[in-house]
Image (cartoon, rainbow, N blue to C red; front, side, top):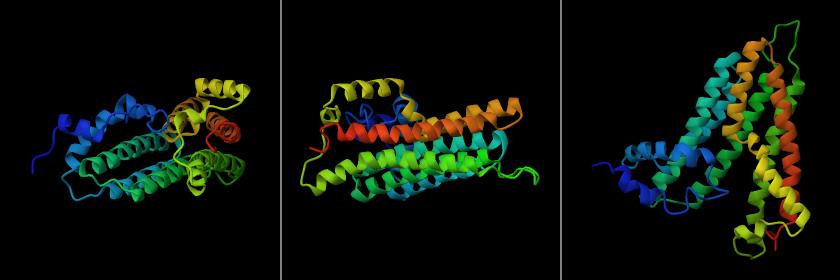
Amino acid sequence: MSKPSVADLRPVVHPAGVKDRRSGEHWAGRLYMREISLRWTRHLVGSRISPNQLTYLMVVAGVAAGAALLIPGLTGAVLAALLIQLYLLLDCVDGEVARWRAQTSVTGVYLDRVGHYLAEAALLVGFGVRAADVFAVEEAAPNWLWAFLGTLAALGAILIKAETDLVDVARTRSGLSAVRDEAATPRSSGVAVARRAAAALKFHRLVGGVEASLLILVVAVLDLIGGDLFFTRLGVALLAGIAVVQTLLHLVSILASSRLR
């Protein structure tokens, strides 16, 4: 069977609204990855690999990115950034293959969410362990404070996602319909202004997989120049602080909105 062309695939696997989803589509997907993924998807739709198997591969790539950060120096940071790009590619491809084959499922959605939790947590934990300098010489033992801060950042990243997902859980258990976009607007004008300011600054995105991997790469270059782990440790502290603050702000934003009504 001949492979579908990109033109054949596009209207089916990229239906109206896919690239425009404000909360569902990553900026990197809109900017470049959706166009790259189409070229991969056309080769995969006729294969035996299932959408869920692609999702499993996505999870492996994401978790491997965190493990790659245990490799000292610039090599580990570059490898982690590349694996996160592969993770993002597979995150696009699994859904595209599912839509083309009409094999979308609740299981696939669930695995996708779990994959995002695991991959982003692994990357941030790996970043913390990297900052702890586990390969330090004997007289300079690893500083596990940085591993703790990386784990704290990972916990915050998970909680931010969980806070969003639990809105749907709470509404479903209460017999309510899915939340609408306009319900996200806080009822308090003060909270609404703070939410718009945070959205404009976009600092919260730094704990996401793609953004964090790019930050890790930048600080690795700076550390290569400086000859120590100063910038890596600064990055870990920054992400831990952002994760804690964003977890609290996001919770307040949800409680102050109409999403639970």
